Amino acid sequence: MRILLIEDEPDLRRSLAQALREESYAVDVAADGIEGLDKALTWDYDAVLLDAMLPGLDGWGVLERLRRRKATPVIMLTARDGARDRVRGLDAGADDYVVKPFDLGELFARLRAVIRRFGTQAVSRWRLGRVEMDVAARMVWLDGAEVSLTAREYALVEYLAIHRGRLVTRSSLYEHLFDENESTLSNLLDVHVSNVRKKLGRDFIATRRGHGYRIA
Ligand code: CA
Picture 1 (cartoon, rainbow, N blue to C red):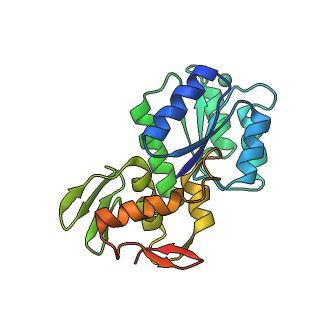
Picture 2: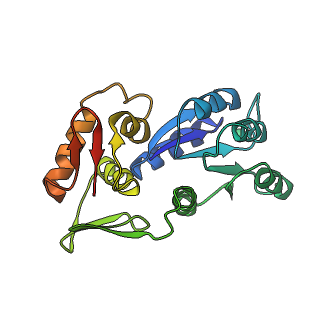
């Protein structure tokens, strides 16, 4: 899952991006509304975390312009005493909001919820042949035994599982699993696919040579 974080406060931007990466998200960042809107329109993010108070184009301006073109899930980060701001954000098409200073666990839960709603994945526990996964708990089992995946391996499995039964192209995987600094490393994906097969079975991820991957 690839997230865009639009936040002008450098310390918060850095720490939140790092926390998201530790949760296995690929993260792009933008320090102002113009850059953020440009990225949000260019890439298909799985969700956008959008600070309300931004220099130049503020969060509501970004949201309004984004919504003319895209339905990407948006969570707004708003000030503590900004009840009117939150209403304004929801009216403008935000999917949810968190109030600063926010609890990371709450933010992650809301993030998972908007991504799941957007993908219309109401159930959090899936069976995929011998593999079972719980996307709320972020756990994976093979034949009932828990398997430990790295953050990126988990993200790969989750993305393929959301699109199970369908072919997922390599370019789509690159766009959703890697951030803008990593996406030029063309063999990264093969390494992760290979490692997932070692852990979850060779047949778990099928390759359509030259096209992409799928899980049944
Ligand atoms: Ca701000």
